[in-house]
Length: 118
Image (cartoon, rainbow, N blue to C red; front, side, top):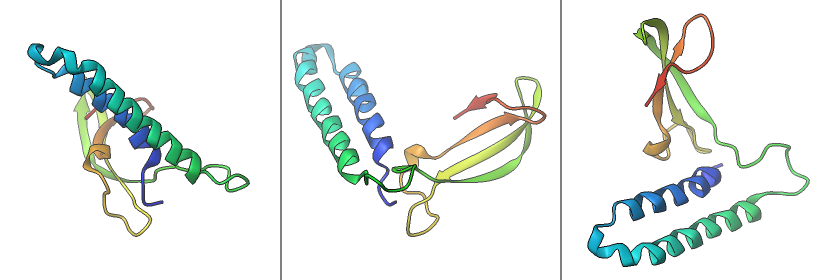
């Protein structure tokens, strides 16, 4: 899959909220139009999700696949942890498609659960 449908469907309202929160006080009258615009963008992505979903197709569709790489061991919160970096794969190769979905996480060595993420 070359387009990350679900990330954009979830991310559009979050970007809209951030845009409204960052509006200067003198532009607060623009909050409703900005909210409407981002609501319509989200609706567009939701419609694209629906069109891309193939009835009778594979059980899991519109998924996103990531490359994970162990970057080493460190300590997080006073505990030993693994530093794991991840970047999204695309259908044509293994290059990241959007930097916003890339990141790192630190996992406790003996167990599960995130210690911290960025």
